[in-house]
Length: 442
Image (cartoon, rainbow, N blue to C red; front, side, top):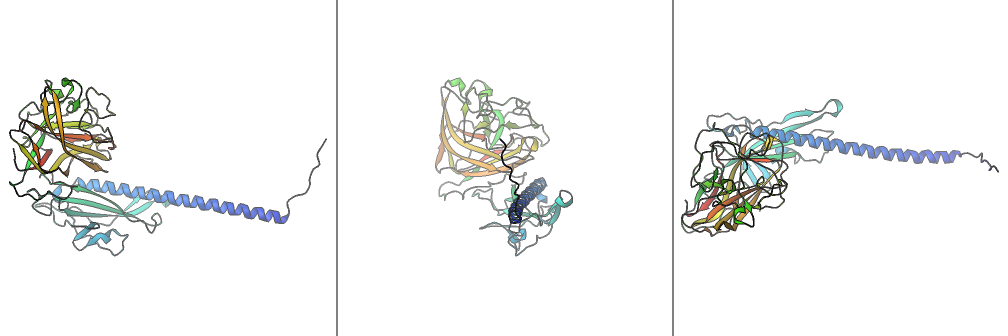
């Protein structure tokens, strides 16, 4: 049986209503697409600005320290969205409560190389070209350091670069992109950088700075031995159930001992070869200790026999030890680590490094560790060429290392680092060291 066909169609009013509804939907869809497009372009512009600033900071940081000075005074501005808003006379407002003097004079015999700008940049082609301007600043840092290493208010230099994006890719309320880095004079032993307020008042014997340089020498040796060849990564901080599992200076195998740290900068010429202290790890590095990030919390040892680089092991944790203390060694509250480092291959990377100080005694091959203090150095843009990083941390006052015991430094490349990191030391061009405030220098 056939059904009846309905020949009735749409009325004019129904058609008008339908067209109106469809038009509203299309308009809403186009609005969403337009908003999404603008958001994508704005994000792309922000990414371009970050890339431009990072590249500029890296280029400036590679200049000789004496040449890191502004060629002219940077322009000031009353517009809070303009980088020049931070310029006030001969000073630069780094952040609320911190103003630093601009570096306007180069070092002796050098020429200032930093043009403050603004300089224009353009990335892209045609109508998609993103344009903007770069602004450069160099300022003096007055480091927190109550030791004799900080005689002036011009201890290190801060490089700061800002980028602004031109319309139409930059929303009117978007602030500039800022990136800064700290540069120390490689020819000097700089004071600490990020540090809490300096030590407590002292009324006893005079406080001095004791420098302990990091060597590639097993700590069973009383003095530094000149490196002679590449070698595999040593097991310097292993712990296990049996005495032979533990990394101690008394271990019969030098490959299972911490390295030595002692007074005296590495002798020789800056042109001497820097040997690989970890040639069991492949990678584009020519010397020093290569490390692999592992572990989300700071540790100062790892399980003996562990061969998995994804967890803390000899490839992420390394330690140095002094010789037995000849007498009571008093720590007066402040420690500074000054370390030459670079990301492996010079790739962009974040880095997170933990430093731990321990008093250690050993009985029948079993170490007893007393934690003295630790600190973490966290940098979103790790050096891409070998540079010195320095950080200072406070220890509880009144810490004493007993005669016959050893002071141990442990460095841990934590898993928050986004790439393998290299540490250069025991070389005249890279005199990495630990500096301690003490009243009983060695």
